[in-house]
Length: 181
Image (cartoon, rainbow, N blue to C red):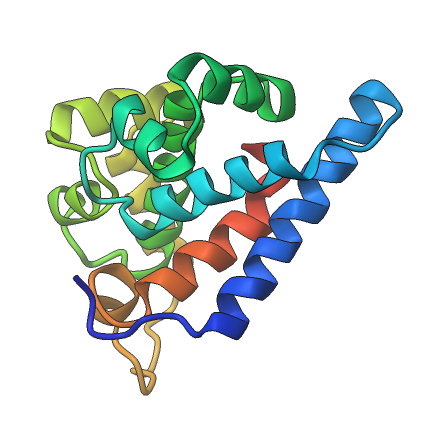
């Protein structure tokens, strides 16, 4: 869908960082390392979610790309993240929306919500308010007040939100916030 695909080296590095996080989480919970097969399944699901964050994603889609049953996928996500993969995906979408508001406070909340996979602005607003105890509009206003006008960089906000740099930005945001998701 996007003009720019991430390189194999970038995807490998991302996969390794997620695998390291999964092994660390599993070791903290059980005192032993996770099976590589389980961790690879989770990484495959995470890659699919990040690559398709603005699309509708259902458990059936995750079953197809992972080769595991819905039950197994949910059990593994609960093991590593304490939530189902769908709840985890919504958390990622909200964290991404928050980052997009910081990145482009002049963009409409409707555009940002759709870019993050929300099908309606009211749903986005309710979810954001529950997660951050502040409506997205109030958050956007506080960001606008606290930021100074920025000189345009070589890349536009459009590239990060909708365009060629979206996958890189989404993956970096996920890695930076992995412990809070």
